Structure formats: C-alpha cells, structure tokens
Amino acid sequence: MWTSKRRAVVRALYVVAFPSLSANSFAFQSTVTSSRSRWLSRQHSTRSYSVSSIKMQIDNRVALLQVPVTESKSTNLKTASDYIRKAHDAGAKLTVLPEIWNSPYATSAFGDYAEMLPNVGDKLTEASNEGETSEAADNGWGQSSRLLMTLAKEYNMYIVGGSIPEKCDNKIFNTCLIINPNGEVVGKHRKVHLFDIDVPGGICFKESDTLTAGDGITHFDVDGLGKIGIGICYDIRFPEFAMLLTQQYDCKILIFPGAFNLTTGPAHWELLQRARAVDGQCYVMTASPARTSPPNDDDETDTKSKYPHYSAWGHSTVVSPWGEVVATCDEDPAMVVTDLDMSKVDEMRMAIPTMKQKRNDLYRLVDG
Image 1 (tube, helix red, strand yellow):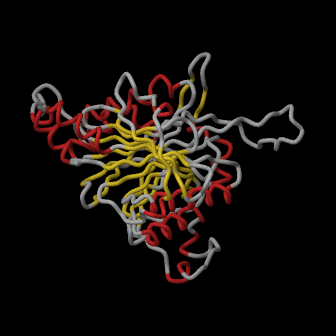
Image 2 (cartoon, rainbow, N blue to C red):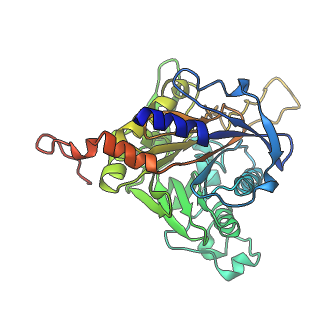
C-alpha cells in the first residue's frame, strides 16, 4: 500500500524548471526520477509559459537556485536577486541558494569576499530599507546579507541563503543565513565540518587553510513544513550530524547548500543525499552552484582569473523520505521547483518506525 501511494504522489507533484533565454519565462519539465531513469530529464518534452502568470505563493512549494558564480561580486548579487525573483514568481514559499554564491569557491578568495553578517533576531533598519547601501549601515553588515533580508521581506518568502564567507573576530567562516518573510534572521549556520581532502589523482582542497569551523546545530520552523535542519556541503558526510537534527530536534527536512566537485560529485553527491533521507526518514534538499568553464589561458581575449577555477558538480536535488530522487537538474544554470507532501514524512516514520526501535542499551546519540 505504501508503494502504490508513494508512486502516485511522485507522478503528481514534482517538476524541474530550467531557465530559458527569456528572463520572465521558463521551460518546465515534468519528471519522475527513479534509480534507473533519473537523468532522462532532457529527453522529456517541455512546455513553456510565463511565470508571471503564477505570482501566487503555493503552500509547501520550494525552489532550489542553481546559479552561476563569477569573480564579480556585483554580478553574483544581481544573479541571485534575479533567481530569487523567479522563485517568487513560480510561487515558492521557500527558496535555497547554493554554497558560496557571492564568491569564487577558492580558499584564496574567501578573505577577499568575506562580509560581516547579522545574527539571529536581527532585521534591517528603516534607513537601510529606504536605500542606505553603504556597509556602515546596520552594524557594518555586507551587501549579500542585506540583499537577502530585503528580498525575503519584499517577496514574503523564506530564503535559505546558501553560504557566503563571513568575517568575525579576525576569523572567516562559511556561513548560511536563514531569513523569514519579515526580513528577520531566524537561523545562522557556520559550516561545522571543513572540507579538507586529498584524493590521489582527483582533488586536493583544504578549507582549513582559510576557514574556521562552526560549533553549533541549526534548525528553524516553517508553517506547513515543520522543523528544517541546515548543514553545508561537507556536513552531509556525517550521519551523526544529520541524526541529531532529525531525531533530537525532529527536523522533517534537511537542507544542504553544497559545491561538490567533479571527483566527489558523480561518486557521492546523490548517494549521500539518499542515505541521509533514508536515515532520517525526511526530505533532503541540496543546492549547488552551476558549473562554469575555466578561463582559456591561450585566448588573449579571455579574462585571466585571479583565483583557481573550481568546477562544481551541479545537480541540485530533492530526495524524498523513501530515498527517491524526485526533482533534479543537470550541471547548467537552473531552478528546481517542487511541492513537498509533508504527510509522507509521517507515513514513512510510522511504516518503518526505526526512531522508536533504537537500542539505547547498546548505543546512544548524545548532543555534545
């Protein structure tokens, strides 16, 4: 009975949206993704229509924004603003930006692009709402956070602000801000597990060369969606972290803005999302930057890059509590839109009640 109900819901609810050439129009592809057919989206027929015909917020509709990132912060801010507007026009109640969306993903760039960020409970002042743009406004908060707070209030939506480099007390953090429809910061997550890896023949990257790890668990509430837990990229590799959010804080959705690469992406990106969804019997959503091409050093007309190029895997994705990929895209710039049926979380937890079957006499999860 569970299987038949689950399949009916997947057929009815999930769509993938790709930006078209027009800023106000999208080609929507209806997809049903399974373990055998999840990358057939480009072979499906598409139908185009203007998102300006929607512009009405739909309960439990979420949007993942797979934006391209450049070395120009002003360009990145404009791109984020455009995509957030598109999410609003598509009826999203909550939208998610990718990891490090205002800066190149390079340890040498984090310090150059880092900003002072607000804390939980902070809002913009009247002066900044009336057009104050200097970083002297609002205790020196940077442009990126003020943009998110302004747009969340303007569009009456929740914004999970991916992550940006944050400077605080002579340290730099990889930080995600969560803004509610009043423009208030309701969550602030500093990446807990830093991306320090060295894969022979693959990639070597050490965030700890520049970044400091966070030391907290972050979750927030949204009417209709319940409690939502936040991690950033490498945090998804630690099941204990996700279990704290789902089992001790009762999160029904986990969101991981991330920027996996071309070595770890094809091997582990989807696998880890499905694993965390099954472990926590919850929805898992990820938002990645779009993949961009490295500069051509042999082309004299091509702008030389100041920072090492990082190729993101892309494939922003939504995974159901059953562990199925139900909405996704490829590596190109995209907006993934889906309607979450939150009753499926409760159904899964009742049908396979692993949270009530723990052997606390043998093992125990402790919030340190």
